[in-house]
Image (cartoon, rainbow, N blue to C red; front, side, top):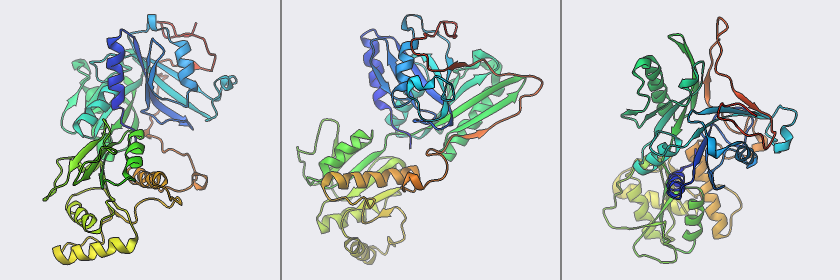
Amino acid sequence: MERSFSNDFAYAIECLKRGASLVLATIVEVQGSAYRRAGAHILMASDGTKCGTVSAGCLEADLAKRLNFNDVPDHPQIIRYNSGADDIFELNLGCEGSITLLVEHYKHESINPVWAHNYASSSGKFCSLATICDAADPALIGERLFFDGHEFSGFHNTNLASVRESMQALCVETLAGRQPVSKHFSQDELLYRVFCDVIRPALHLYIFGTGDDVLPLVNFAKALDMVPHVVGWKMRAKILEPDSHYIRWQQPFCLDISHENSAFVVMSHNYEMDRQFLGDLSRLPVRYIGVMGPKRRTERMIEELEASTGFDLSKQAQLHYPIGLDLGADTPAEIALSILAEIQAVFTQSQAGFLKAKDGPIHPGAQASRLLLLDGAQMSPVQEHTARPGCPVSSSGHEH
């Protein structure tokens, strides 16, 4: 599950207001192992501040030394870091892979990953964003097409209708499969590669309960870029911080939300209330409902609800009880960690096991489709950076 970057948008506005220049760097391809996956991005400002990550810090430090904010090219550049280079250890890269970045001057009104993530979080929609990240014609690099599930935005070059049609099809495919896709195209004598990413809205976490153990769950959720909502009969100032939300429960309970990217946690510690909450939530087409307490307690609730409503709850895959992963949790903070770890596993469709027992790479790569370039055709030249900090990027796109 890729993170929400709603804070990037606010950060960009703040930087532009104080007159800082901004550079946006986006990972468009990963080969081998890397700290972040394709789609991750960072905003770097001329005043030395930044928002986001593309590595554990090594690439960010090198980019900051290379970039000349007084002479940032208007056209996007492709930069590739290859850990196979002899002097890559100057950057302390230990991932044994190559990372390709699309580096560009940030334009606040243009379609880009920061804008797309802000749109998804504001609208609650899953979207897709296609970016041309390699091409025989350098002028194509950085062109984007955005799809919100209904309409397309961007890439208005009417002379390249076939390119737009290919990008549209890839946006639809990516959004339907909920997985990023990287694909090469060769059509109308044009050679280009498109990376299409799934843009996910922020995950909304609805917590039914107002006990003291809700607070660490709220704080951890915020740290994971989730949007926490506390649901209960009465408000508690201890739980309600400025960027959390309170919903007063009343019957019949209904939420005007996108249930696809919402998780629900029942933890009032009151049997009657929890049963009522569970009964109300069972009517919603949600992906995750977690109930705190012993298994037999929740089973009894289900039996009583089934007897009164005639609705079979026991076979619903979205029900998780007892809530959380088995991490040996005991304290409220440990229990919150266990709950959010399970939610993360559900929404990323992962097994939540030990990585040491996993064969293959840690992260699944973007689904790739490659073609054979015939007749000596070549894509655009790429900067190969081999960890020589302090080597600036010139306006022509080559190292000095």
